[in-house]
Image (cartoon, rainbow, N blue to C red; front, side, top):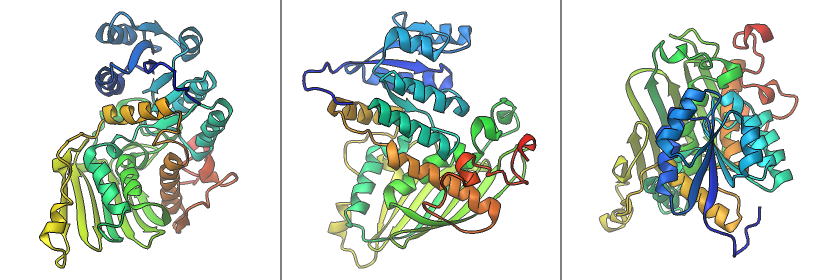
Length: 374
């Protein structure tokens, strides 16, 4: 979509889904950018939940039971999607066809095939769909990426990416969780994807994955833990762990470069203080001092990502976290599952139409596919 210089700077925004992620993260982000956006509509199939959200958001927000009715009546510029994953593809495509940009919760789709449906809708409409990967947008992450991609820290050599969280049986009592058709996968797709997306954002393109996955505790269709070994195109090697079995919860990313180690330790979000730089012995202290995170502290958040998307909208350029960039993260997840379920290494670019892992993350593997598909 091309935005002319005379276009108004305030954008009409609608939310689809009014549950916890929208009321707790998207609504504060919209309010933080109140000088740039107007929240005009909300969509939810649950009337009580919709009414509660409208009371929280303000009476000026119109309520709708379907996205199609909302799009026809409101013609928003931007649609924020916070519904269960199985709905993302169709809702994003509907918004794009109506000419609206999209910011959708992860995973944007359940498969690479669905992602390519969204790409086709983007091309036809001229609008864009971005996925929520808010950890990229904190000032600490922006600073770390600048240092790594500029070569200031030397070549990345070794990385460790850890999402070790804990989810109990009550968490999986929600009907759509733990099922391939409605969630798309386990902690690889629903939890660790944030952290390994940030790893890819910092280090660059991956080349090869070897992996394992298991159901060790939860009675789910999908895994409750996965691990991977990764080779990057630049030569770096990495380990990745995605777990919902870990009582001591932590999110951690460590990148050992030739000149310094970069470490991020947090849980669900980070600030500048979450990042630590350890210089190699040969690096002088004055040079290392310049690596400290910037004085201005922007936490990783939906607010930060929404600002970046609005900047892109104002200039009519593709927003970060969309297109090939976001597809690479989904491809990483698909390759991890394929490597784990087939027992062989998987290379970037090999999963395409005709590959069972293109259509579904379980790849129709007998030990993992839902019974009705086995």
